[in-house]
Length: 345
Image (cartoon, rainbow, N blue to C red):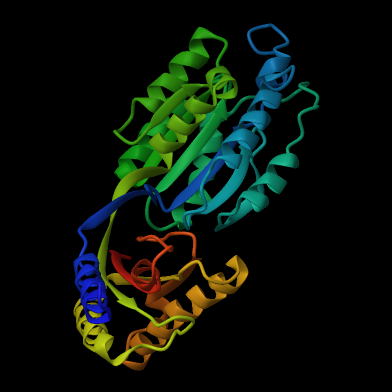
């Protein structure tokens, strides 16, 4: 095959590779703006669960189980821009004020919860606890708030917790959701928790012992409460190609980038992903850096054309993701590329 024909073949294949359909990927998006861990710290929680010492469920008392559950759920909660805090009732106490959520901050607050306490004179005012939670912090928050209630449902003094929950739902509607971690071991407690969970479409309920036993149950519970998976459409726009060991943009690819610039400017909700690639000549470490320089050179072009740099993400794959064989000159030419992708922000 003569040299001109080889070049023509590379150009034709490159053109064919330049246009691709959408690639679908799943991503997590938050269902709520804020969430609160609200843990029952009353006298009944200091007793063993169902009269037994279920060490496999996190400890020998219901408050130990609640603490273990909070730990495990926190470990699996994605950091999606929530505000979060931790409070107890009976007595009502703030362990972590509402702030941007991080697993580390919440974990530190969970560890402060005392599990060895006297039950003498300690009551179970669950309804009063919900009223206090409304005063601070719920009423101060904007957006949608989810409240994880870790409780056995017992309430032996003060206002009726079901009535308080109903009034809160009437006040906030679907901007307030209850996520019940059910540690009940009495019929009354079970009825209270189920009644609260039945209010509104956004509430969730699961047995505490099942959440401790089963990671899949924890994942399902968190998905019910905090996030959902959506298909994230990524459109592959074009690829541009580079000479061996180079990262400068060749003149023949400027029109491609000009077209890309116009599309990006016309769609302000669009994010740009630039993937830098190389052939296999050279070390992996060198090629990772070269791939990054290729992606950065395309980013520089777009930024000079007025695209906000914060909308552009650059990634280097080095030699790890070839589209053709590296055993021929034609294949290596196709692998020396920067792939330009668009997705919604």
